[in-house]
Length: 136
Image (tube, rainbow, N blue to C red):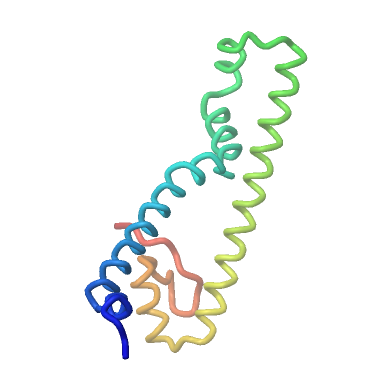
């Protein structure tokens, strides 16, 4: 036979309380991880700093940081390289989006194409031609 002490752990109330404690610990641990660890391991910080530096402008960086001519040359080169790289990525993104849209249009019926254009907020310039941005 089971003794009274052995049956206490099988009590649904005790198991429910333990489950609640476990879930609370899980939530607190997740919140702490998100607040502290993920904040310190932000991989986008270099991207953000380049965007901010580009937004500030070379002249203001030169004045505020009192850059030497050699430093100005290096900073200028890095900002230009970043702008070119960013433009290349943007061009590639547009090409991929256009190709994907064309693949979608190839499988749609003319009625579906019109509804597709409407859903995306674009209109066809004429029947069978590429879409043109809609003017609201």
